[in-house]
Image 1: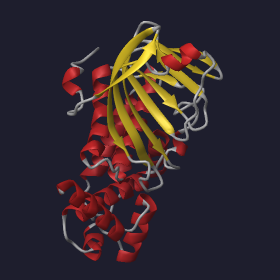
Image 2 (image 1 turned 45 degrees about the horizontal axis):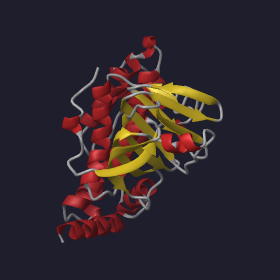
Image 3 (image 1 turned 90 degrees about the vertical axis):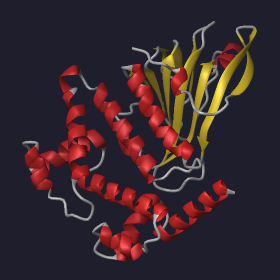
Image 4 (image 1 turned 180 degrees about the vertical axis):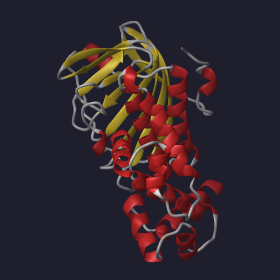
Length: 314
């Protein structure tokens, strides 16, 4: 169930950090993959790190077994080697390789590997109302903060794919990265469903692929797409929203804005030309929709990304 972890480590030198754990000096390897607390938008990635031979919060827990911390954002911690324990106000839960620890704003918690052990983890922090709709029974649930994801190699690669694109893009997440995280969460939730419902993951992947195949600028006939999956349009929309938290139309709109981000970053086309190519009824409507999803206007987005690229070249 494992994989070649060394081959998938970040292409950068880790920091070596020291702590006294179990009465002995211990070393962990720490990669800060990105840190962008000021990223704009209704939902954004904030921070991510990769830690080898992690002690988690073990040093603090050894000093004070009642120690708990509280975050102001969401966080996913995927443990891909080692075993340990998660603690919150409800008690404790075991953690093993392949478990993801789901942390919530305002929920006091602590976690770490077992005594005399270390674990390897990758984590990502995120915030914003775009993610609030994913909280509840059967989804990201504070009552079930530790969930299992296998095979380990597959899910580790999904986390690496998510944070790697941000790390390579100057540590500034875009809507595309928020979209990737939303898709990752949707597939995690589908994976947690009972065995009889595992087909939901495959269904969702097939539907997303079908929607992505529709050429940019062409009007989407959702009734026709629904019929391809033997569903009426209303039943199709409800099932899609149950699995993803958004409607098919919202998914398609997000994809269009993702394309707009790419065009603003990589071409000199005017905002009017981009809005026409993407099928928006007017430049005004395009700009309004863009700002709703990204948190800034298309022109400001282009200026910001150009400034970041200039700093990188310098």
